[in-house]
Structures are given as C-alpha cells and as structure tokens.
Image (cartoon, rainbow, N blue to C red):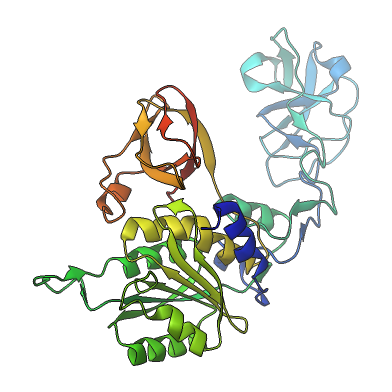
Length: 394
C-alpha cells in the first residue's frame, strides 16, 4: 500500500492543464483565476471620509470653525480649506484639500449659524488616505486562486469585469454493480439504492465542476467498456464506484487497460478507502472509487479533489483546523492513516459521530469534518489537539 502523501504526489504530477476562458464576473464564482488580477485604480481613489462629520485642518480642530460647504458621497469638494474653515462631509465622500481630520457629528455643536465647535477631547483622523488599501498596479488576487464570493467584490473594485479563468473540469460519474437500483425503486432482496452518484455529483458541483451522470452499469465487461468509452469522450475526468477491488466482478481495471489507460495507483494506505484505481490516458483521468459511500467520500476528499484543482492550475483547497477532542477516540488497527467523522461542538471541541464503518453514510450527514489518525496511532486522548479536515461547503 502506498502512503497517502506519496499517492497525492503521483496524482498531482499526473495532471494536465485545462484551457483558459474569459467569463462575466457573475459567472466567476468557484472558478480558478488563470491570470493575476491587477488594479487599475488606487483604492480608495481619493482621501475618503470614514465618518459623518466636519473635515478640517488639525491645527484648527479646537477652534470655532466656519462651515464653507457640504460634500455628500459621490460629490467632489469645490475648494481647499483655509484657516478656521471646515466642510461638512458624509461617510465615503472625498475630503477637501488640506483636510487632516474629521470631527464626528456626535462631538460637534453649532455655536452660531454656519459655525461649529468640537466638543470632544480626543482627536482622531477618520480619513482613509488615497491608495491606503490598494495602489494602481497592485496584484489583488493571484493566478491559481479559487474564487470565493468576497473575491468577486475585489475583482469588481479593480475593474476586472471579465476575469480569465481556467476551464471548468467536466466530470462523468458511473456506478457499477448488479446490486444497485435507482432511488425511486424499492430494493428487493440483496439490492441497495444507488447513493454514490448523487454524493459525488454534489461534491463536484460544490467545487464548481460540471457533472454528467451516467447512472448504473451492470457488472458486464462490455457494458462497463461502453459506458467508460462514452464518458471519456465527453469528460475530462471520470469517476466510478464499485468494481475496483479484488472480487470476481471487479472488472474496471481490465477494461481501463484495454482502453489504453495507464494505472498509477491501486491501493493507498488510508482507512476507509484502501482499494482505489487512478489511471490516466490522453488528457483524460480516471478514479475508480470504493462502492462504500464513506470510503468514496474520503477518497474524493483526499485524492480526487487535489487532481480537480491541479487541472485548473490551483493548489490544494483544504481547510484544516486544530481543535481539542471532547472524548478519547480509539481504533483497532493502526496499519493505515485513518479518518473518522466528527462534529464541531459549540464550545469549540471536537465530538465523535456515531460511526459503524465505511457503509454508514448517514454518519456523514451529522459530521462537519474528518479527524485524522496518523499511521501507527491507536488512540487519540481526550483533550489532545487534533487536525480536523472540514468537509462542509456553503
């Protein structure tokens, strides 16, 4: 069995780059930037008022001041301030030339019509100087960034209305197995409903990928071959579940070989999810995942996701937090790196989720992440700080 870190290196080094396109900003969410985003302006573009109040020179702040104009947001001051003068300004408005501070309205009184006096004791600036946040020519977001909602605001602010992004990976999904029936069917003896396709489709969609679901394929070599051939023609990456271990009906590896694919992974030292097939063809990738839903979820998180982003020129998009365990966790075998579902309690501790094994997919619905058992570790004591890989999106 190959250690996980070595397996990830093999997967990422096998990646090829997808193409690049320009998309309207509203369509850029969860796409990967293919070029640095550079600002075409200073931000703020002028010395900006951060509070409603009266802009003045610092030397005049404790004098009675004559109000010479009002400057709302969106308007420009008409002139510079002279000695003993101030301008009433609104939050977000440009301040007049020579203004060095703002006397906030809560600390100003009118002593005569058009004349005000500062009643506070502590003078603060309340002005953001031009270019304080961003300078013209600054790189605000770097190539390879997986764009989040807040990034769209950044792109809009620097005039990047049609960012260059990597093409979205197209992912085909196939479930194999004579025991599978669709969700709308009531399983008979020895049958189960196909749940893996929907879990994998959700995972891909949450990352911004495009999904093609090819449904269920029976354990027949010719049917598997036909389904894979079509899926490879229409997608960049194909995921199957089932049919990749050592059983009599685990036919996928042989079909891949006949289709000209090179298998680069067969077993990885993770629990759950040891049996896995990773193969590559001509700018095509394949993962044969476990038929057990928790195993396929873990395999996707640890191995499929790195390739998904590597295809777009991005690094790993993994969120790991280190938190204390609320109770001791134990396992029976420490031969492999292991992952177990946990939830995050309100007090900031990590609490185990009831988990019966790799087929217990209901456990994932109650989990916020996966806690990591290093290889050789049988017990994680209560109170110890453990790494938790977060597995929720949105």
